[in-house]
Length: 339
Image (cartoon, rainbow, N blue to C red):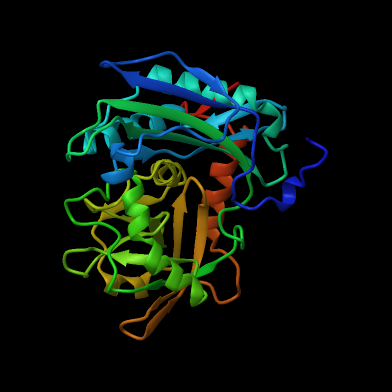
């Protein structure tokens, strides 16, 4: 297998691997981890995940270092975020130790799919929690299945670490102000598909959503958090409808280490014209610099890269985070789990 995969040409897509891990919640408790080679699951036709959107998921990555060892980035943080999502839509919470065991087992069993160091690729890890059970009424399920599967992936955006344009469209919302925007559930992503498809048809990498209540402040991009750089300051939105990105949290720490001031606050749309750099960040994309933001409703553009290259600060943050993930830089915060 290692000789048949062109690691440097991988897209961000699904590839069949050897095994996935499953665990069922029944009669008020979680069972033992199960190893499966099947790519499908049996789901009752009246399961809450199908009718009422009772499902949540996570995304994290494993990297192979120069020393050949495999490193998983911020494993515990993903476990805790899934628990927050579970509380948000009343699902059984997967304990941290069982979550971590499932992820570690899935990575070890599929070790041959972890891309080599220097390939620019990684092993994407997808934990998934689904509400099961034969229910018709709108209420929480009494059974759940937790699944972890993996796939080797390339960059989320085709341009890789190159600036890409995004746009603002005010007639679409990703989430409601007091809804599920701050937890990682599929409904948020379904709500972004129409606007995202229109943006991509127009040549944009993503939509930069505004706050769903007043349309005055920046929220986040469809698949990623937003941040900007101005006068040695890292600025990122604060909002109840933004997913708490683990990548953004990591970049905030690294920005402080680099001597930047960090501001997490509401960001008015008008402030876009004052930024020196802008970017979106998340597990899949890591950092994608923004070349320009086109406000399609106001017929106005904000340009951050005129030469097609990322800004100095975005590049330094990207290189630093990537080096920590692969073991090229010391992990000073206990972010990395080494297999």
